[in-house]
Each structure stands twice: as C-alpha cells, then as structure tokens.
Amino acid sequence: MNSYYELTYIISSVLEDEQYPAVIQRINDLITSSGGTLDEVEEWGLRKFAYEMDKKQTGFYVNLYFEGPATAIESIERTMRIDSEIMRYLTLKYDAKMKRHKELVKKNAVPEVFPIIEEDDSEDDKL
Image (cartoon, rainbow, N blue to C red; front, side, top):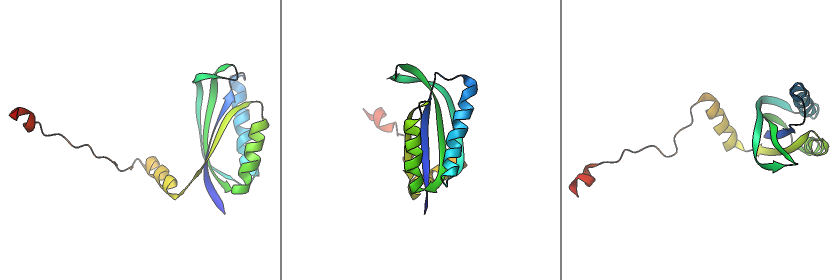
C-alpha cells in the first residue's frame, strides 16, 4: 500500500551552484528506485538560517511530494542521514485530510475557515 509523503531537505551551501541539480537528481532517483513516484519537486533555493547549523549560515532548500511504500522511507532516510551533502531532512506522511487540502491549494479553492465579518460601528456612535 502506497502512502503520500512530503520530504523537505537542506543541501549544504558549500557546494557550487552547478552541483545542486546533481544532488537533487540523486535524491529523486533514490525515491524512484525505492518504488516511489514523484509528484512535485520545488526548489526553494539558497536561504539564510535562523541560527547557525553545522557552522554554516545558509543552505539550499528542496521540497518534494511523492507516493511510495512505507518500507522505502527507512532506506531513503538512512541514505540521506549518511550523505554529507544533506544537512537536514524531514519526511511527513500525509493523511487523507492533508492530501485533500494540498489539492485544494493547487486549485486555489481553499475555503475560509474563519470568514471575515465586518464590525458594526453603530455601537461606538452611541457611547
């Protein structure tokens, strides 16, 4: 049974700009070789950290969505953990509600949870 996942990872900023696509492709190939299918890959680019990590101030962020077997996650995370070019990573498993929300965001049709209610100023006039 395949589940839907979101994987965000940070590539070390020590690499040259030309090397980032190779690292991203290597992670994408790792997911597909583990039985997963990529849905979307977002390169957020080089960003400054809120605090220093591994004596570095910046990192190249990548966010991707994929579908795959639960058994693949362990091998993907193990490979990312030992890869010296990957500074941090986070894998989230989407439930049905999260996946539905993501699809609504794609369609730009997210309902307002708390609609904006205009206040009546007539009470202020009475004071």
